[in-house]
Image 1 (tube, one colour):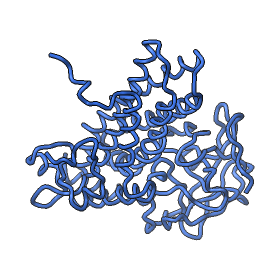
Image 2: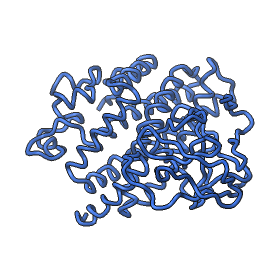
Image 3: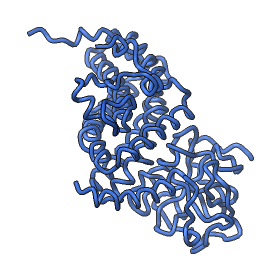
Image 4: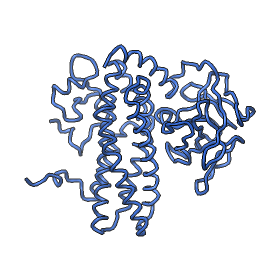
Length: 236
Length: 161
């Protein structure tokens, strides 16, 4: 496995386009061929689904920080409000203001037009809206360095609701919605859409946005003491 | 899944993309209709011809469309043909309509110089889920028939423009 696949050295999207191995999700070579956008061999370009899924990875890591904060609350420990605020800020700008916009612009409309997953798409849209409201409240609450009892209770409730909604939300998108889009579009259309995603991200955040976001999340994890992946390995 | 069905869907999808993200080459056949509707808790606000709530975006500052790309997926602008604006119905004031050319080349309907948008998460006509939401770099508010955004108590005021 390439050293560049280490979480501490995340690949940039541009790097993947130019010279990456096309094995972002750690797939085996045969799986890589399956993920390729056209052409005879494994593609070096992310598919739109892969691109969106790695952004889901950023969200998942922030959800882990939220879970850690809930664990601290359950143990009557102080809430690290700055860490929560930092994570919510990434969600606000990168996930809710960008990633979900890509889905709403380029993923959901063709599915709806094709009459596919219409109810699912409606539910996902409603969840986007609810998530944005929850994040807005989380950001408001965590501007304070310390929380009142009421604010702490509200924060815990909002973080738990956000977690409960987004774990199945992104799992459904990864396993049902994105594969359906892939079936709907031709290889050339997928390539074009992948290029559009790159251009949109570059325009909004600059050329290394994904790497920057991963670095920021890694910093939050370090603050919370959950950056060592091995701590999550169970003893069997 | 049938590739034939997929191809047909793509033709429609292409039109959707143009409408949502603004490829700029397709022109709506007729100007869109903007009318008014009474929405519980908010009063009378502008809606599009299908009854979906219309919003303004504070960073537009009555100068032009700033929500494009992914933002326009979340907030599809109300588009019209070049040189056209909207048709007024109900309590909408025809004198307040105008149009602005988006950076993506499309033409967007304005009301009292505010570009108008719908919200993707308003699933049903009359939904107003986007009211007073801070997203994509600024606040979004519904538009009243007199051309002023409806800013709820406690939300940031709109800077003078």
